[in-house]
Length: 551
Image: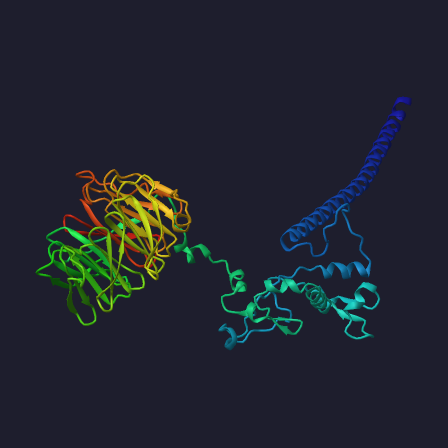
């Protein structure tokens, strides 16, 4: 009995214990759920804080990027401080005042009319790419700060807008620094006064400073580079009518379009030079005179033609008429084949016999005087616009004659020369070159030579045969040297550096060094854009010199 009674009791106890355990478990779950909620809230708070920090860092990075791109607009760069303290009204004023505005932005942002500058109405000149909207909202008290009181226009003025404050700062800066106004394209007034006439002239210094155009292109023709000459071969100048004999003379007219050629075939030909067709204009046959030399007068009105005869011809271009002149009164010359014309077109100098130089007027065609050298005369060259005449010959000396007094100013030995064969002078008379029978060319400064210094500034010995012809181009940067004895005996000297161009004469293929044949004469066009060279084969070779833009 006792066992049966205790069984239900033990079962009841077990049930109570189980209920208690379940209750404890439920209580534990409730407690655990509260803890989880607290932890979840903490995690959420941490995430929000991290997100806020991330956003703040992004804002800081954006501000740094804005400062790099647009300048330090809100936090001016300072050394020794990482952060600026906010809250000061003066601080806000200062940071708005440092707004950097391009110099080309107009003070009043006025619209330009279409009539004044040809632009569409409504388009603003120098319009700012970005504007600070806070400028309109900020008010600055210029009366409360001592250093800002000078910006007041009226004595009782106090608050002004931020944009007005910036405008007054800029105006005050311009007043203190008037010299910076030259950089502004539209500045023509300084403190209400107009600029000087010299500063506002068209093409003045201001116009040069306002453009970034390449000034070297405009002045390209001033300096020729040494080393290699840039050129191109064009159609032969006389391709429309080649000569049957050798070419003894080529000469450009002052208009740079007309070229004459002459030679032993007794024909005087005129060509219009364009580098492409080179059309023949006229051909004139002289029955009794194989032509040794022909040249335009510098003024372009006449052509002087001579040969191995006692007379010479004058051809009037306007009248298209030939006049036969000679023999010269008082002289018994067997030949008047060599001559030179003065730069002023007034005098013709012929080489005479026994050291005489014959001076003939271009107007009357009469003998006006003679000059006498100690030796035979081989070459002549006018200088200083026809006032002086240079001569050389068999005695190896160079004579300088004053044609106004008909006396010899100076004579000196041409260094290394026993017989002078060729002379030429630069257009301005500063330089002259003397060639010899041994292929040596001496280049002198005329002022030094006349002053007693006989040492040449350069001796060119690239040719080995007699120098027959020389020619300076118009600006004396190129000196052409010709020897008629050998094929391709032409050298071009770069005068500023006193060196020979390495790529001239031009290289040839088959047969080697044969296209130039035997050179006879050479001439540059008035602007040196063209160079014409006559040879013994009856051709006039034409070249374009790329450095010179004008023919």
